[in-house]
Length: 334
Figure 1 (cartoon, rainbow, N blue to C red):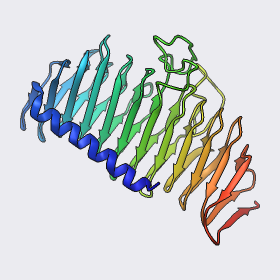
Figure 2: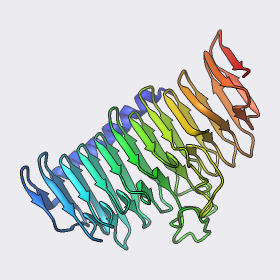
Figure 3: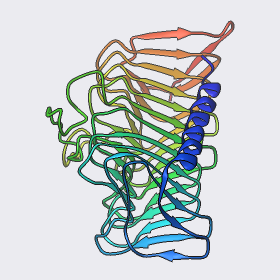
Figure 4: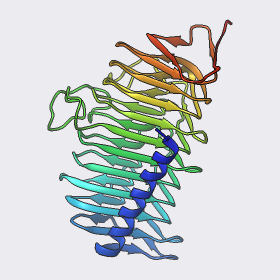
């Protein structure tokens, strides 16, 4: 499979969806260039929200900047969407949304999460701008539901969390729940599968860069220009209040696939944890700084060419497949 073409196809699909919505959906709100809107905006039932380049949508206190309700809706941002108080920049109401985001501008929050999608819905998030959370408790993107989700972070784009970059969890910041009505972790291998495609940067400044909770066959592809960095205080995302040091990328349970052409770094020395399940790790010329733990299950590393590992950095990998004609797999004993 050509994953570069796969990424471009997904980007095209997202663009076509936004184009279709732009021409056929009712305009819920537009923040025009050169204007500032300070009231919360809502989207639902075929609504389209637009923030033009040079336009600003900003709220304070506990008011979210954009609230997503029931039905299919989309938000196109070329300007600035910000929440300067304790709320979230984008949040969901108690409904079942299908929400598409095309961000080419800046979306930021301080006290809450920048994007918090905490009801069961279908979410396609495409970012070629900046999604940033600069407080100590929120996340860049926090998705708490049991349905499929796609996150596309394009070349030059950034998803940043002062705490955590991306968390796809069960609504309790790590407490595993088996309630299928409220939790991503339902014990099922269908439904909440996540797809994350990264050509930009995904940063968890203090903690985890990408944390997935639940028993699902998730996919993470980090392309050649992609950078994923976890912080020095990264802890397990599947344990509430965990004090156990953990990896920058935590894939959770299920038969996951992680493909890396770029850079993955764990600033606490732990880079990748594939979690439970029969996982596949594909390393193709990128670099991983920190340990790689396959977790439980029958795990496979597939590689081509030369890959370098420090002693002890590769753990719980049962199978190694070499795909190149004349490969060299090198372990550096340190």
